Length: 71
Image 1 (cartoon, rainbow, N blue to C red):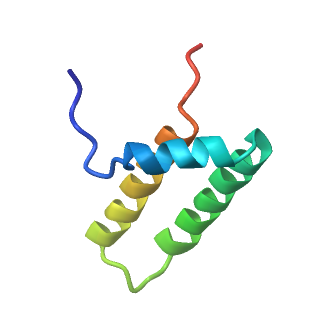
Image 2 (image 1 turned 45 degrees about the vertical axis):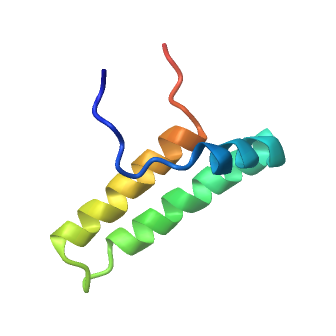
Image 3 (image 1 turned 135 degrees about the horizontal axis):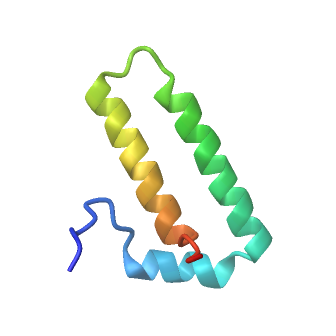
């Protein structure tokens, strides 16, 4: 069993997102989240720990929103 994700989205919220958003809207949301992360990660006033938190939160959310495909 894998390590539990500390940033896990509640299943109710995730289900609501999946039911409400179209595939195109989900892709747009994922793109917006990536842009937000890139902008926030580059802010000089954040410490290394805060940047790590931003990145971990973003990766976690994106993996739950749009699970990686298996090749």
